[in-house]
Image 1 (tube, rainbow, N blue to C red):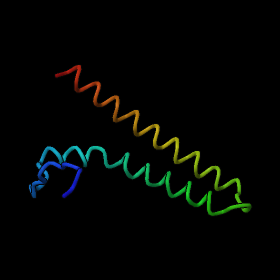
Image 2 (cartoon, rainbow, N blue to C red; image 1 turned 60 degrees about the vertical axis):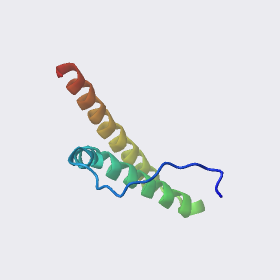
Image 3 (spheres, helix red, strand yellow; image 1 turned 180 degrees about the horizontal axis):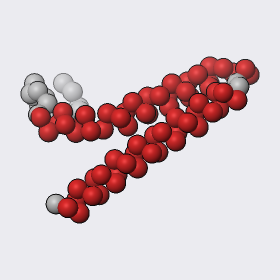
Length: 82
């Protein structure tokens, strides 16, 4: 007997709206993945961290900020128009 009560999971496929939302956020997901890759490379470099490694992280952070800002602006704009 489990002490954790979980709701019954359904085997439904994602709806078209769910897929559209994922597709809309995909650029941000990809940018965050690039940032994570840069951070992992930086950590793995240890004492051999170069200026290029630092620049790669800064560029990836900037890309995440720009895309997140664009997505946020788009959400605000659609709420104002609707």
